[in-house]
Length: 230
Image (cartoon, rainbow, N blue to C red):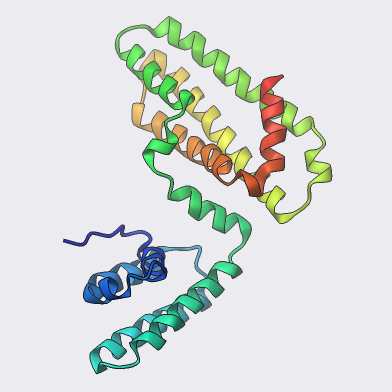
């Protein structure tokens, strides 16, 4: 049975078409159509003008299938319109979409495994050791971010890519710092594990995502790595 991600059905549809799997797509068209429409309804990154046009394009494919002709032209029209929308997206919107699609395995860096281990250690009663680790790692993040802000990148890098990279990097760093602070404050009154994980995952997704697309965000990541190493 065909199962599709509910959040990016349109993206998946175009990918499958471009892989040459049009026959497979059309044989399960009802499911593909449902998921594509769902993305149009829920994906705020899609401009309203394109939302209507893409919905109409999907309807044209549906009508062509019912009539038995014109399907290939309708499919090509959808793919062309989809890529016009992709081009129109801002750099930050495109990056956020790509970051949101990272899998769990991609997030499991050493830091992620460390905070999971710390949560387990607290449950086992090792509060003092965890508190010391949290203070150290939070200070390292804060100091590295301060050094990054003192660097010359904010003065010499003014491209859309570098500015988007800076904003996402800052958002990721601050999310991690909030995770450490939530964790630390909870040591005395009970740790909200899910809240800590939620903040940590938000920060981790942004930082890992920026590394995945570092060819486009290379300058800000290089500056932060240098700040982290000092």
